[in-house]
Length: 327
Ligand code: PEP
Ligand code: MG
Image 1 (cartoon, helix red, strand yellow):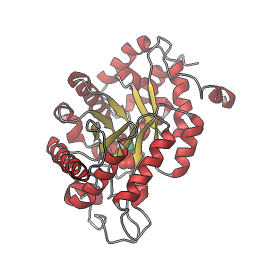
Image 2 (image 1 turned 90 degrees about the vertical axis):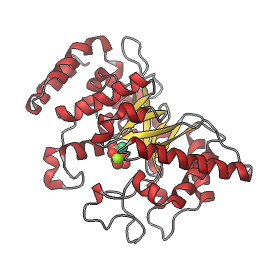
Image 3 (image 1 turned 120 degrees about the vertical axis):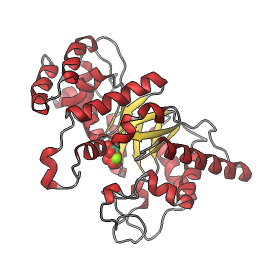
């Protein structure tokens, strides 16, 4: 099995009936990047910038961020890189610091993700300028976390314009068409994904938070993790709605939550129409293995049965059927 996985390193992620699937890496720590370079893949689908801000007395300034982003783009070697703007709060805390939103009673429902960035315009603008400058030399996409309404996207787009004007005034280069995307990880955003999709260039489904908020289970509370269920019919409806919204508006939709890196869900997600997966590089070859043993044509009926089911108790059996006859 290990030898088989190794042999998949250079192989294309393609289904038996010839559909090419994009497999991207989630990067948080420097060692993740090293692993990605070994494993290979189609680029970086989620770079979590919190690491740059944590365990230090001050926020990184624009030049330091610019340098880090340039290094990342160089390591990706021309492949597309999606960098997420700061997603502080809740499970992503600045340990031992009074900067940030983590003292709230309900941090997961508080000032985190894009909410925090919009409330700290100077911090946000600094990051946007650093990202835009990095976009001058290599393909980069900017991704906004924890979007709840289309209004937040419009506000963030205005901030991008302000950042561009500053760079224009300084005479610094950037890609004027740098794609801006929204993470879909709040049920309200998944239910109104068609509206959010009109204002962005791409969507990415964050199942870790989407599951947390849909099923009302704190993702870091062990007492309730028995309820954590990626294939709960309510979660699947939200995922499917988001994929359909992207198709209708004509923008790509990826998935970067942990569900995308779990091979037991690969066929289901392919059946729902997902074509771009982003995951920790340690799971990339396992997922590629499933893809290369799957016929998309065979998934149609079985995916439909899954989506018609409203009983969470039947999901394991339906999943077994979907994954049967897999080499
Ligand atoms: C997610 O919520 O699924 C996600 C990818 O973001 P994070 O795990 O960093 O919150
Ligand atoms: Mg998230």
